Length: 95
Image (cartoon, rainbow, N blue to C red; front, side, top):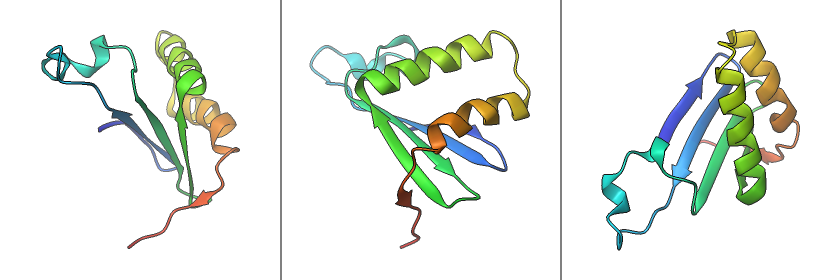
């Protein structure tokens, strides 16, 4: 689990589940393709979260990488996350 982003509005955590059989656990997470896992996006104001995986997670990752190349402001990055956070239905609950 890797905290990728944390602002006043959003938090993004990457959750990777790689197999150990090929020594993948020794490689840096950024250099590996997502094999299993995805991204958890938390909308702090709406108090909802979304977990994305598969093709949607790959699309999200590509969009983030493209956005990073432009050196976005916090507001620009939050605007990108807002498009995904609109799909969040799961309430954030403290245990």
